[in-house]
Length: 525
Image (cartoon, rainbow, N blue to C red):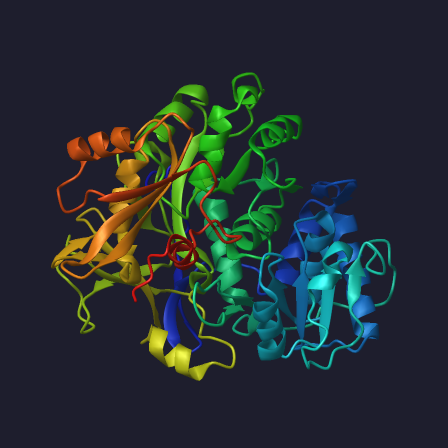
């Protein structure tokens, strides 16, 4: 399944939302159309299984139409925004396609979001209806001020056996918003990225092609489907491949390993820390994980030691680094698995249709190999932020999204992420890329995960501080000794915080550095 060894069908240049982009020429034109193709070709294949619910593609489409009828009876129509607050389940997957059936716009909400963020998403999107898990009803702000039809509750009045008449799927333009996904910002209010049908479908087809997915695959969705990774690289990719979606229970390493073996999982995408935790579990050495052939990861570098350990334990598992964002409708680069071990710090090559530029602060492309801000272009880039023209103008330029990531591209086209612009540490004029130091710290046995932060200093401006989750076998002296051998003087953390607790991450697996700075008292005075 190596990306550089596969032969892809040629893309076609097309005009969409004021840009000329390269797209897969053979594609469904809507999410409902994508599901319709799966029903036509694989009606009896299991589409989704989770908890006590298992549905074939024929049953899945019928269930989505039934829930769409409930929404329609409540006054929901094409173009209306429907919020979905749920944890991963087969019912949640059905609801995603029920909303698409009406031509309405999905607004996924995270169960980990704070009430302020939820209220903002509901108000900003102008949601006219909410579907939520019965255990999450209390998270919906009672005074959000949004006129809504009565909410539907998964487990109560949202039933997959409902048989209302929703009619044929609505005809929609693939350039229209199919979902508004609120970015998990660390400061300020989240921005609603307008995910188009074209972008979602193109990225789903990309993952199918890159991973070599087929109807026989059984794809485990671990990341929340309320976030871009779980939505696109889990649910939508499974439907695009006409494969089976396996809804994983909340992640804990030992039960996950047993679950993956029992369900004969063949592909999934997780954050590196999850792979590390699996390697440490006794169950990993005994479980039959033979069918597991695709292991995507992202959100952080995978330590070289972890890559080597996985290669020894599961030689048939193809590991591939995936790099993207909400605004890019998921992965913009993918590492060819054959080169994962050789290039552990790279995030791989641009995926089909992706254009990646490395730009200086004045908006000029930098020479090959030099660092700059990564700009993303292609059919998967959102047109902007919902009802937020100021943010759209600031973050988009000429059809490209300015990512805020500092990176470089080598002569072979491989992209390396050095840091977030805002996370770069200025130690007396020397730029320290926190992500590079974190990757090296993660190579030390006993380090579970690491975060490198700027510590305010009246002399140098900033110094390097590291917060490290360990397995309990390391002392400050052990880490300082390792750093003395592995890092330059400017890169070495001068102060440490060791803990056995996980570092704070959002539901998409990204490290919440602003929260960690506040917790550690590292905010500038």
